[in-house]
Image 1 (cartoon, rainbow, N blue to C red):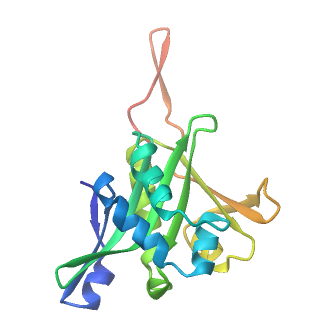
Image 2 (cartoon, rainbow, N blue to C red; image 1 turned 120 degrees about the vertical axis):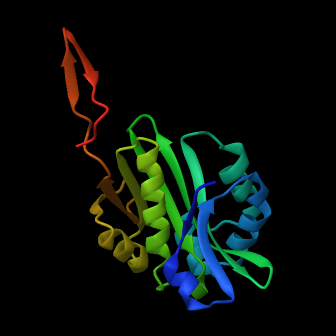
Image 3 (cartoon, rainbow, N blue to C red; image 1 turned 90 degrees about the vertical axis):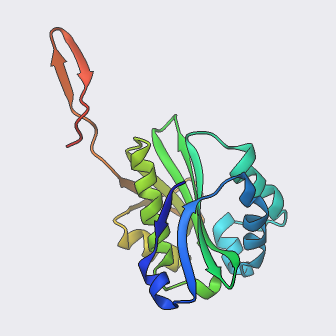
Length: 192
């Protein structure tokens, strides 16, 4: 299991613990419930439109599209023997572009407290561990919170195919150098 403790959240209250982990099929109901608790503007920004079947979306994230090149991280608050999802970040690798696409959301009560940055950092670490070199996302042009998060994380902004949106890209690692062994060129196992 991929668990990243988030020290700011743990320090906020000794009675509660907050951590980020990879979601599993057992988390479908928790994730669907979480999506349903987001405010309408947060839902609209996360899904870039209006949606209503959160169970289907959670199922697609965690079961239907479950492959090695896709994952969902959840930020989970453990308090009084209850666990609640308060944020999520979903990732899918596009073999056509060689880039990973991500989407992220944080429940309204936890926004502007560093949780989005923690989720994005965990997502980037996981993508690198899978050997993926680049990451991109899109958001509405008026989603100032997401644009600020992407800017702080070092993403570069570009045009999106969707005129309502803006795209942000980031190179996670440089391309591996190649070694020449005899007459063959092989990828280096060493990252610059």
